[in-house]
Length: 309
Ligand code: SAM
Image (cartoon, rainbow, N blue to C red; front, side, top):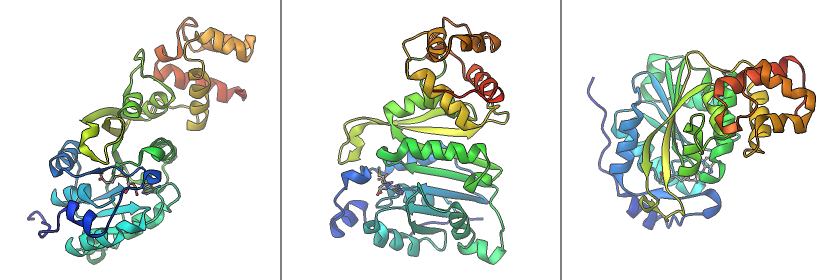
């Protein structure tokens, strides 16, 4: 099957000028204007494009969307909160030969069932009566202000196989502030290690695929960015609810410079024994405890019905 192509479109710079799309700080709008960068992100994300649904979060004026479509994606749904981008995105939809549609919605509250429905209604799917997608890719240059709440929400949906995470194969290729990206991928004993590392790595393999300097964005943010890929683990380490693990990790990392024994003693002196039961060296600091050991600890705390402060 030949690769579907996009017709020639006005440049993103021109669209921003024509529609007077001044970036809104409250929606964390920092745009990428260099197509080499968005093409590189799509290439490194290694998207499986046949029989897959690609969900883009926050397409803005749509350069990353163009790269996704340019790579041959047949089913792309973008969720954008800012109505000012709808005309440019509708223009792209009309040029996409039924491969792309846009939803004006908030990704934090959108009904995932509607995303799937819109994906299934796209061009050839409607004709071929496809009822589900084998792969779902979540992609986006995320609004930095809500990137962490979005990721945590998606990890909860992935852990419980809900929403777009019901699909058998899901991957996420997401741009974060560099500091947040480093935290997500940090292994045990890394200084960047934190709650997000433990929670993400309990159910996903998380790794950096691309670094993007602040100078690549308009307007220029204060910090560099990083694209992280998260792929669900075939054998998740998580043995409790993700909520319990999140609670245990948050509680431990709140006192990140203290030893685990001290942190648990401050909670209740009798709870230091939990560490020994999980074979966690009580002299370790939270950043040195492996994800697997945190998962064992969360499992024990949940099984005993203990309430963390
Ligand atoms: N994808 C574009 C790019 O790379 O140039 C824009 C990225 S910009 C960092 C973030 C985008 O997310 C903006 O278009 C913004 O309006 C949108 N956005 C912010 N909050 C959102 C939310 N809760 N749901 C969906 N989109 C959101």
